[in-house]
Length: 284
Ligand code: SIN
Image (cartoon, rainbow, N blue to C red):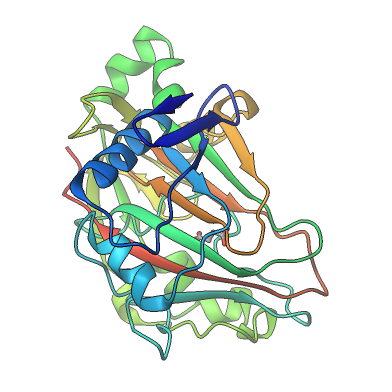
């Protein structure tokens, strides 16, 4: 489908579309940015191929959608602290972003979106999966929706970035990325279990296995059965799409209504991506 100057091709029933006919390295006018924003809201994650961006152009593109965050627990690129080098080397076993999550949901103002740019990709594998959290919510029973609508969840960065995380994962699994494990990752924030997207008005499920630790006023043990159910339900295959990267591809996802998972199936090869993360609003 062509709308304005950009062509849009959906890649799955649930979410995801490839946009073509636009060069993101060019300074983009408000109309072009409006079309991209519209596509993001409609498809939840959008992709571009054959883009040739300098780090400055990557940052500038992200800035058109909001302020860029500096990750508290991952050392930023020497090029610019707002760029995370998502890197896995041939000897590494652990990857960054492996496991379903929404970015930085442990912050009071989690990310609006992330723009990931492929610098080096493995010969095969290393895809990223995305899951629509609108569908995750809409497919629940009315009774479950009514219960969840009034509930609050507690999110924390402690599992991946707390002082104990090194013992569990070891940086041995990842020579390539520097994680800044810290007591600060023990902090907890509360978000509604069902959030309403400020731009589309649609409701989505807002819990994830990486950062949601329990429901408010419940223990972790009490929370676990329902949280497990929701985290499994949220990523059912029919809610997902899967993106096959090429060098110079870009994925731009809306963290307010999408979870993602970097598939770790390319041991022995290098994968290098640059991510910029756009600040969002407090979930409601
Ligand atoms: C991430 O979670 O930002 C990483 C995604 C990826 O590398 O595919």
